[in-house]
Length: 372
Image 1 (cartoon, helix red, strand yellow):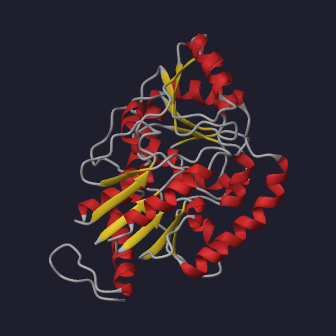
Image 2 (cartoon, helix red, strand yellow):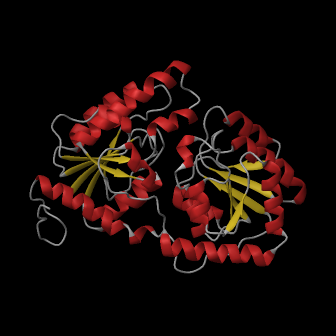
């Protein structure tokens, strides 16, 4: 099967797109064309894929990227059996003549508007009905896969869920240390940027540093740069997910200080699962899905309560037995419930069956897929 995968919003090394879904397709013997902003993100495409470079859609500047994406998707779909797009924006750039098309719904698009500081006020009132209409139109014309169970309520039909699981080593990772806490992921105000900077200041007299690993929204970058200049923390910027998670190993705690906003309220923060997979005790705000996933292998602190997060870090540092148990329990739970290779075959079969329903397509092993 030949699959064209497209994004103009996400980093080409996005963990869900590249390192889970595309990797699963390649491992199953399928061919992948990847339309993504390689040059913008300074990424060299992996040799196993056919890469088509496009501009990246950033902030309010998206028209150029969408124009380029329309042409790129047309090229990428020329001999494809299936098109898989990862951005709601790309629903406006789909080629007229295209193969079976799947939209991977990464987030609650309307709820996510609250966390986009660059949007003018009028857009926050005019965009929601337009986006919901676009979603409803996509549901009538495309196949959908959802990243979260909670997204089901947004759609009239039942759609399969492909969760944001991660890779979990069979052997236990290094034990947590005493001198470093980490945050892995995109950094924004709603993800606790200000709280983490304040926490870093409280922890510095105790010899505990904060590592921030991930890109940041424009409105919080000056604060992060100032904090780094004064030695409060180390901000590494974007690091490919697989390397970022190795950097997190051995940390005293992994932070997930997300705010109580609609886009996070019913979602499982992937970083919580990733910390668990790396044997890092979790400190999270009380978002229901985060608490459910953690299953006691960490600490829950109130929203916006930096003092509580500070106490949680020191309590873990002063209790080696507790942090060792949190590390072991978290790794075991992640391996049992959130190991991506356990779900990858299901994802691949889903795409194979949808492609086969349009026509007879060759799949690995020399046989042909049959319609379902």
